[in-house]
Image 1 (cartoon, one colour):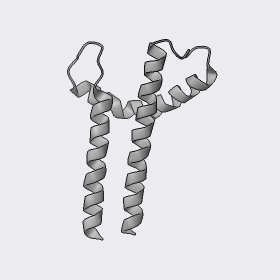
Image 2: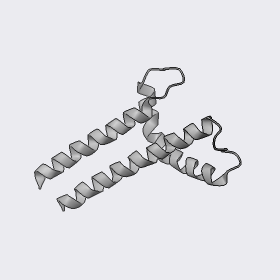
Image 3: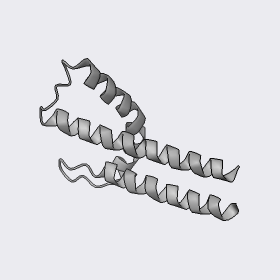
Image 4: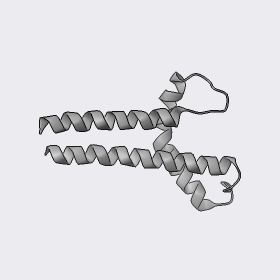
Length: 97
């Protein structure tokens, strides 16, 4: 039972990490006009889906961080937080096994 929980924690953490990384890259490509958000239906669908997944996690972090102008550090904080929680839970569950 414990190895299955460890696998589940790691799978969810990896899903969040990759979704966040893809979201960051796509939003940068849109901001620099490399990818057109308005005319490309696939990009719009992917970004909207990732936004619905990632933004609820980023919003509380953005409220806590100070305003740095145009720099958004909340994705980095979320990545570190997800890795920290993953390591903490895996170590805790591993000690129980």
